[in-house]
Structure formats: structure tokens, C-alpha cells
Amino acid sequence: MSERAAIGTQPAPAPARDRVVHPRPPSAAPTPPRKPSNLALRLVTASLLIPPVLYFVYEGGVYVLGAVVVIILLGLNEFYQLIEQKGADPLRSYGMAAAAALPVLMYFGYESLATVLLTVALLAMMVVQLSKARISEALASISGTFFGVFYVGWLLSHAVVLRQFTQVVASRWPDVAAGMHPDVGGYLLFFTIAVVIAGDAGAYFAGRAYGRRKLAPRISPGKTVEGALGALAAGTALGLALKLGFDVAAPELSRPLSYPATAVMAFALSIVGMVGDLVESLLKRDAEVKDTGTLLPGTGGVLDRIDSNLIAIPVMYYVMLAYVFLTAA
Image (cartoon, rainbow, N blue to C red; front, side, top):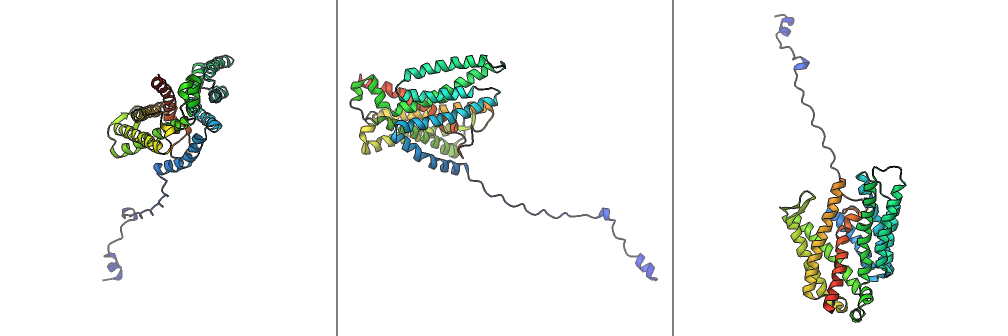
């Protein structure tokens, strides 16, 4: 057989287009570094915030006033950013000035003038809006600007008068204040903030561990009934623990509240704190944002941190005034 014939008997190689090409598996992408968990960031932020808060509450006076003014300005700026998301054009400088003046007036004992200031501020906003060329956003501008002054400025200003609670009582009922320690307000303000924080923590951990039933799915899908129960339990328990601890270490500060009153007050503050949280969640959902800011890692903005206390502090102040009046009568 000729060499050509022998070669011809060998099978021809498959055309290149019929070959099955197995692609190389892509090299594994490098694993990105793990981001700190939200809980870790929250704990770090809390550890940085708690010492100055305790110091300001303990010192009282201009320390509380200065802290409240700064927090109001930061929180109100975030609020105005929220309403800008809705197309409003807030009268920012007028709102900031009015909100910052409220705690100053209340610090010097002019609560009635603070309410007058709210009226004057609203009238001024109307006049300023009249001079603006655009009228399409007039309603949103005036109402949004004024609501921010009330929601952030007026409500948080009550931290100043709550810290000065003995002095406030003395101006109304001198005989009642005669037996009251000057720093009772420091205890009441600390009690309020601590109970609200405990409720927030209780809601977080109980919700993560046992959360099944949605509390307000349209407003805040992450909140659950089980988390709310955890908030009530944690807030009430911490309130009673604070009462017990202060009765041992500084009974002159915790004396105005009995144990039953402490339990009721802590329970009520836990509820009010959740209401404040839901109100802010409602505002954020309307503005279609997750957080009001990025100043506080793990928490969001200043409003995200103070939302519960915005409602809880005024409630504590007015309820305590009523409680002192009724128990002294």
C-alpha cells in the first residue's frame, strides 16, 4: 500500500467549528473586606455620645442649653433637607433663628415668651413668603418651615426646663419646691433619656430574636409587635432599676417619684418613645429616604437619634408638673 493511501485511511481531524471548547473557569474574585455590622457601628457611636451627654446632664445650666441649641440646629437642618426632597423651599434662616431662640427663652424662664415667639415666627414666614417670586411652593414652604421649628425646636427645648425642674416648680408653687433638691431635674432628664434608650435597645434585640408580626408595615416594615413588647419590658425594667439605684446613692434626687409612679412613667415613656420613632419613620418614608443624615454612623442623622426623645421629654416635663401639683394638693 502506498504511503499516500496509508495516510488517506487516517480519520481527518474535526473542523475547528465542531470542536467543543471548554472555557476556563474564571478566577475567584477577591473577597471584599467585611463591613462592620450595624450593631457594631451603633455601639461605637453610642460609646462616643454617652459620656458628653452624661456630662451635660450632670452639669446642667449653660451646658445643657448649649447642647440643646446645637442639636436643634443640626436636627432642623436635616428636617429641612427632608422637606426639600418633597419639593418645598423652606425659609431655612428664619426657621433656624426661631428654633435656636426657643431654648434660650425657656432657659431664662420666659416660657410664655417662647409661645409668643412661635406666633411671631409664623407671621414673619408668611410675610417673607409674600415677597418671593414663586408662589407654587408657598403652602409647603410656610407649613414645612414652621412645623420644623415646632417639631425640632419647640419640643426639644423642653430638655432645658426639665433639667431646671426644681426652679420651674419654685416659680409656680414655692412651698412644694422648698423640700425639693435643686438637681431633681437632672435625675428626671437622665431618667427620660435612659428609659428611651433602653426601650430602643429592647425593641432592637427582641425584634431580631422573636419578631414575627409587623407593628406598622406601611410606615416601618422592620418594626414588630414582639419588638414593641421588648421595648416596654426593657424601658420599664431600667426605670425601676434607676429608681432603686438612686434611692441608694442619691435618694434626694429620686424622691419625687414613688416606685409605682416610676413604673407607670417608664412604661408610658417607652410607648411615647415608640410613637416618636414611628412619626419620624413616617416623615422619612414620605420623603423616600432611609436616614435623615449620615453624621452618626450606624444610626444615621441627628433626627434618627433624637426622634423618640423629641416626644418623650415634653411628655415627661408636663406629666411631672401635673404629678407634683396633684401630690402636693
